[in-house]
Length: 477
Image (cartoon, rainbow, N blue to C red; front, side):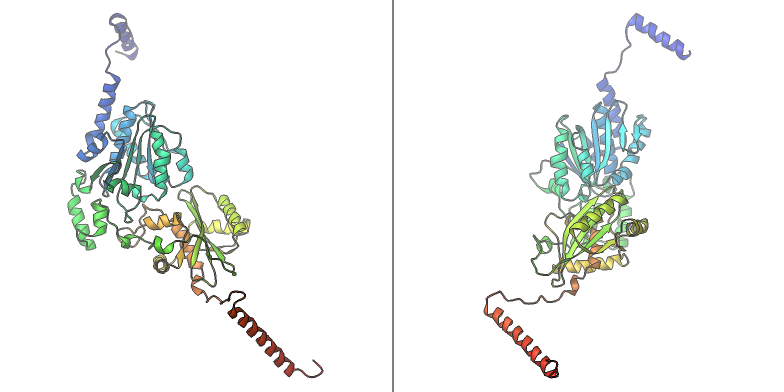
């Protein structure tokens, strides 16, 4: 029977016997949504099925939390036609790298006919629902989330976020859940700092969040996980109490300052205002270039009579083009008379630096990047000694508090941002605060010491004049 004949048969059936029976839409949605659980294991299903509106999943690495998040997003989008859901990572690049391939894989696996907009990172389902992928390390990205009405929000690798996550969750995202009585999920692996809203929501007894926990050993899709971990621990000479093992592979909060790259201490490294001196400060600008990653700017101040380097300005922004960076440097130059402008000239940075010199007349010098980790140790020495000061609520301090070493202790963990860290390192290496001299003593006006100083200076000047006159001939006087 050809398609035309088939349609005629259907029309005749409807004419005679009314419309053929159909499944209820809710039954169809349930049938479609439950199929997603086929490849999920018990702890993932328990997390997704939990009716709590605020949930956390504290997991180890390779525990399957990304698959769980993808299934959850699709399930809610299918069950709630014409709804919005969001997956939020620290950066847009991270969101694209982690979640975008997983959504496309599930689309193929379940024949869902999702339309993917690769430039906007937006997935459109046939029932009118939309899944957004975005980052949240930039104010512009955060502002895009305002005004939406989400049925589900999943924030991934929450331990990598800085202090701005409190504002993101409480002021920006929670109001977007009101319309649909939506759900907020915080998922991730613990950090070495044991700080932030993710740490509080998974540890404090009075937290409003429902808590879930699983590790790589619970993931049946990696059946050899235990043997692999045992070999890894033996190779790295770890025991089962090692903080990296407990944190990364057991999903436990273990504070370890040894795992942090920078040894920042709020009790030692904060200041309220620059010291008041009769001697001018010198300023150095450090620039770390980026586009998909943030471009970062730090302005540091030092004085020839002080052993301390002060951070006086910081800023980082995603998506800046060279002309915008040059314009920002020029505006900063109106407020600070820079002794040096130091920039990362690796890769395309070298051509950008040359353009700044020729087209914008900005005297950029290349940042010294050799022996980076040796210089990080020297910077840490200054941090411990209190010779580096930053303002309270500094974004640089947020990065210092979170940035940790990778497992081999030789590279920085790429899950954490280091843009301001690098910009400051460039500034610090060009600073001469370590060459400080003893501040000249100036007695207070009107005191005995003040008048003695005036008298001594007058006597010295008179003595020098007398000696000069003695050496002169009578006709020169």
